[in-house]
Length: 416
Length: 72
Image 1: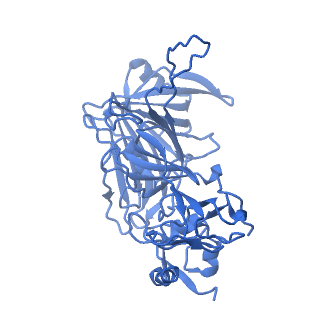
Image 2 (image 1 turned 120 degrees about the vertical axis):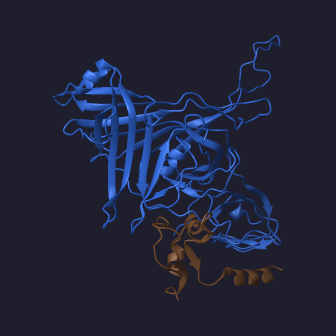
Image 3 (image 1 turned 135 degrees about the vertical axis):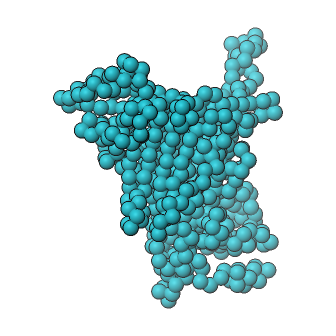
């Protein structure tokens, strides 16, 4: 293979790995891989200051405003990713085992009415070799949606993300070698962990042999004192200096996942006080979305110089959403005009978990007291349709929460 | 010699794999085709399970010791 010039720096090689934090804001080892796009921005912008020097030049002394770290995370939903909800609805969730021969595990998430019980995650994300790290991340707002007309026939997760810092992962800088060859760099008594540097990119900052100066190589192997890589055109010698750029946390394998498909999603609308999941809406259901807002942010105090405090400012939880239906029944309109509440269930099932018991992977969103808001009439092809927003009220007499999301899969523990 | 198994496939969890790497024991030819990042994902211990997805048949410690002797 022809050796490529330089590190990859290719957007398609983007990766995101996470770990669930023990103490909010304290970095932890990453243990899981996510397959969506975590796009966090660090905003610490230069601020204007009113200064005069008797010239037209007013930018005399640079000063910054407060730091903010926020962004978005989006992915197609799978039955194997219920961990997203631990950072959006409730942390500390354990699985409930159905006890069948092939075990199925259900993770049930509900907003707490009075406790800040969200988990937060540490993340490393980016493209090789520029890998960012952030801590205390969670989702203050998320939307789950599905649309039978969407070219991506799957449930989608879109969310805001906030954290307290964003930094580039550390580089091993200015490492001076004591020897080597065309395929090895040696530093006596270096004391590196065997195999821990595999996957990192080595940048030769200065070399005795001019033909290898400024070249890059990916580390294919390492022991305590040496790196191994694809052959260089000349030998590395004592005094050559390298930078060793970071790699993603090693040892994290890929996971088999099953997408929650859009087609086949069932919508149930039942009268409040009835049994949720009884009356399926068929022949009319086109799309749905459900949004949860925590109205949360991170506080800042004087000791927070370049980052935010890990203390969270929490506000009112609000659950909203919308349904799009063919407009050929008056039930929803009547409920809207009467301010009447309904029970909503949106459910999809996946592959079979236990054939004998007939259990399947499943995702279920229950809204316990949905009240319709101003509907919008429109058309889909030649049909009249209605898009009906709703708000999930706290079901005070029943479930005591506005919403519950349950996901069943074959994982016995919730991933990070 | 390229058929000699260097790493055993020892999955630590259901459905675990490394994209682009065969889900079976690996020969030298397989390993030579792997990128550094794939090797890091496949051969380093998983941070939760404590074991790698592919376990080296011949421990590297001995080879490392030989190399260190040579360095010194």
